[in-house]
Amino acid sequence: MTFGERPCLIDKLMRQGEAVTILNADRLFPADQTTRSIARRLYSSISFAPILSPHGHANPHWFSTNEPFSDPAQLFVVPDHYIYRMLYSQGVPLEKLGIGSASVEDSRGVWRIFAEHYYLFRGTPTRLWLDFAFQELFGLAARLTPANADEYFDVITEKLKTPAFRPRALFERFQLEVLATTDSPLDSLADHDAIRAASFTGFKGRIIPTFRPDLVVDPDFPGFAENLARLGQMTRMDTSNWQGYLFALRQRRLEFKARGCTATDHGHPTAATADLDPDAADRLFQKIASGKGDAHERECFRAQMLTEMAAMSLDDGLVMQIHPGSLRNHNTRLFERFGRDIGADIPVATNYVHDLRPLLNRFGNESRLSIILFTLDESTYSRELAPLAGHYPCVRLGPAWWFNDSPEGMMRFREYTTETAGFYNTVGFNDDTRAFLSIPARHDVARRVDCSFLARLVAEHRLDEDEAHEIASDLAYGLARKAYRL
Image 1 (cartoon, helix red, strand yellow):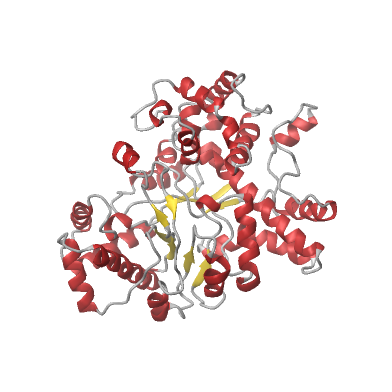
Image 2 (cartoon, rainbow, N blue to C red):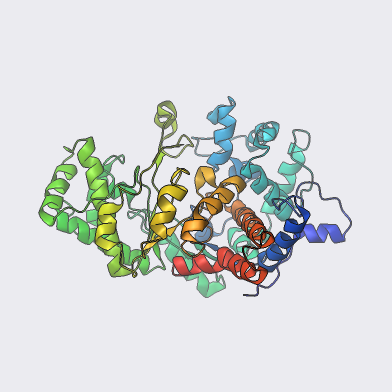
């Protein structure tokens, strides 16, 4: 595959003779010169490939309204738990960062706090992503420090006021081909309807929803009973009984699919699955819906619902993503003060071999079904996940995720899974981000790491270079397009 070039600010600055001090052109490539040269060649062939973002958490409202982003603090700091998690770990109160407020009263003050603590991100992938955005998008070629914090703030603020930095313009500038958001089954999808309507006025971006049913399949989700009632109201189904509940979920999935959805996403605490007979499932649902289920029964219900979702995917063709293994809202005080998703989620050990067996006994040999497995437990890469993906026709491995979405984490993923699952039982890369401006940076990091891994195989005469070029293209673009049915 040949990809057209896109403008590169680094190259432009170099042509103008200006100093570039943040990013090195050989970042993340091997130190060995022979292997580095191979990695350069591989990367040059795919660096301008279009971006597929088949799983993430960008807000569809940004694109439906196309309003300017407000300021640097609310663009970079407030929505990004990678950032405020680190600052909180060093004693910065979340209130000082504007977290938990409807609006940030002193954005410049928040930005100064961020700049004062920028050194905390040394050696982290967050630093790579931020430096990329600062230099590539805003032309800021000096490292962020307290001394230049105001200059950064002013330059970014002024550029955000221009048409070139509105969400739809950035979508096109990033060469995004597809962007998938993550959406509740109780969402009206009005923003997605507005985005589709915008296509008649010139915006050609493909932005699609992803069906994330956690709040109506997880009995531990706050407001679960109320959520079931709302699902019934939206679908005009009786969600107080098992069959009506399943019909309501099927209906919402089809409504998502009509708006371009190609995948579901399941953020369960574990990978547990179950395959109860219909009467037992009905009885369990009645107990759960009445609020009487104990902890074991609630886990059994979640397990049954993963199997039910797999059955629905066989019918409607939606790809199934399973993201288990996070103990969410670990910090009780923060959860009580700020609510869900405030960066206090901690990875836990996860079992896949035994927990997935009920689902795989029923559907594992179905080549029409596609299940993408993710993990926060790296110890399962070679022991469990790669052997599962290397055998079952329906199983694929998602990329290194969340806490492992780093150069080292990506390299470990390739090293531990390739020997058993190969490259073609994986699905390329997805960025899984709420920070829109980090998308091109994250894909750039993944492409560089993959090219470094492939270069090593070529240098060790385990792979021919023409094969490595083909694999690099597939990892950057082709595998995601195929796996997510884009």
